[in-house]
Length: 150
Image (cartoon, rainbow, N blue to C red; front, top):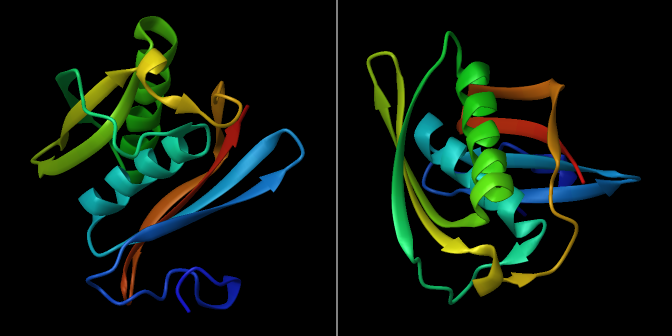
C-alpha cells in the first residue's frame, strides 16, 4: 500500500502523496510524485497539512515566484523558505501550488488564503532542517524528504 514504510517512493508514476512522522519537536515529511515539479508542489502541501486544514478554503490571492537553484535540493530549500516567509511576514497559507520547470530553476504559482481563513490544526513550522533535506528521481518517479521544526 502506498504510504507504508515498506514502499515509500514506490508509487506508480501517476500517483503522488506524502506522509509525516512526528519526532519530539520536529516532523519528518516524505513525499512522492511522478515529476520533480509535482514532488515540489506536494512537499508544500505536506508542510501546510502539518499545521492547517485548507480543504474547502478558497484562495484570496495568487502569487508567483521564480526560483533559481544550483541543484534540485536548492530549489526545494528555496521553495520551502518562501512558504515560511509568506506565512510569517504576510500570514499567507498556500491552498494550491503549481510548479513548472524553467531553464535555470522553477516558476511557482501559489494560490493563498489568509491564515485567519484556515483552521489551524497544529504547531506552525518555524524552520526546515536543511541537513536532511533531499529530492531525487527514482525508478517510479521523484521522492523528497524534509524535517520541519515547529
